[in-house]
Length: 240
Length: 260
Image 1: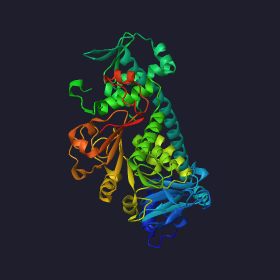
Image 2: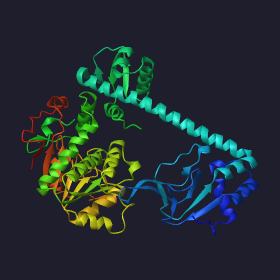
Image 3: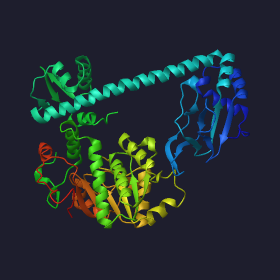
Image 4: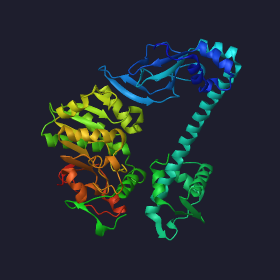
């Protein structure tokens, strides 16, 4: 990667200001960092990252598109994903950022990449404690995202299973009414929870959510399916 | 659900709407314990058998398998494995980067890479002109781009791929439906498709899975499907009965039967 001869300091500062890591710093701080970090212009086809690169440095896509690929056993390229600006590539333990093994990254169009090594980041943190706060914020966000994902996965599975079970019950015990399909089987929440394979508490939470979304209503331990089409989408895991 | 009086059929086999087909898949998984990977494996194996029947033999044949991001693509990837096992030269072209495929097809890409079957992503991994040369040089193109859950006209990479398939003049075997046609309406998607109007595969043959879809039973889709085959993925008559479809076993003659 070549250093951007064409990137003027003021341009570089403008690009740095957009990076989360440097948010909240003064103009003069940003200017000082501008001198200390490497901002490179990349041309289409340029390889930005390869498995042989030193570990523990990050590249931030500031402009342009980047293609991530790996080599198949017969040496051909297989595209894994296409990334846009804002993506952090490479790995740096300090940021909880890992690298997909055996991958290469290549610029698809002319772009700008900001590269930072751990030493540079440490030095910058010493000089500008605000960056440490930004790093903590970044890590906290990642942690929160991971927790949200876990929660969504666990919840999605129960929601999906409940939707499937309700559709199955409606097939067997359903009666069409003006309000929707009434499942003519009285089931306590515990019985339904056992059928779905979850706890009564999680089931109650999921039922309440289905009610709020207008998928079902409940009436004296009986369920009425109000929106069969959307319930089917939930059952198929298509409701995000 | 459409009432039975308006139900279309192909050679006496009832055609299913998108709503019915998703209900059938749903029942298979939730009530009958027949999983999606199982169905995908059987559909893919049947597709390879259909390709063999069309070509008479797969030995030394050259096939290109076009793969979309969903379960239809997954069936195509399974077929690619079996086609390669029968001695054909196969090349797989994905219409999306690997990470943008759903989980089941993604796992099946890994198997093909391990088998050293050439897999690439269009347009990213192909040099200029390579795709057209590949399509023209193939004996048969397997179209596993879009399935019955596709909505609206073909878009993005798939919409760019279809005209090049047509221009190649190579015969196409489509999985379930010729890609680009509406699963219910055939050529008539019921919405303005703008620039993508007419971006539809003209198949030499179509292998429908479980039941023919309505889109190839209506006149405005039937002509895009070519010869129609039907594949058994093991769904029982009791399951069809629950969605209001009476089906006498069509597979007495084998796991793939020719309907039209």
